Length: 148
Image (tube, rainbow, N blue to C red; front, top):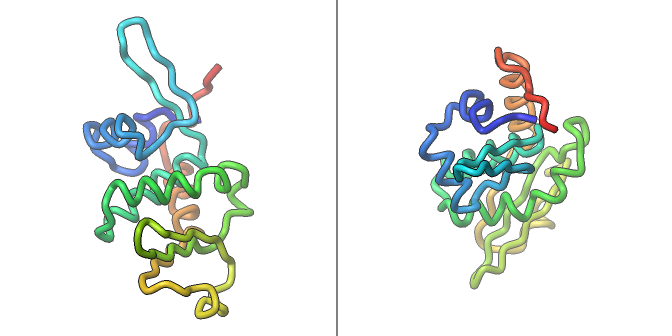
């Protein structure tokens, strides 16, 4: 498990920004401890860190935090049940009208023209996100914390 501070250091996210993303539920930790003082400590699995980096990637290309949060939430169940070697290579986000957005996973873009039926489409190289996060985690001087 990685603490909020581990994730902030690894992905170079400012504390206030990351705290806001968690409070607004754009990013959902896998575990959160609440202390009597009201302070909260959040923890993320490596899959959770992949999702944080996905969120960062989506907002860095100009998508809104709300839309990026929706995508991360939609991907969460699938991503949390896989290990790094079984992650999909690509996430395809087809944006339709009236919140009619389709999110799919694929390892092959050869048939992308058959998959994409909507006017706007985002293709995320998720395998690259996994690779980059894995490299940052391996280079981190802070090993994953042990959570009881």
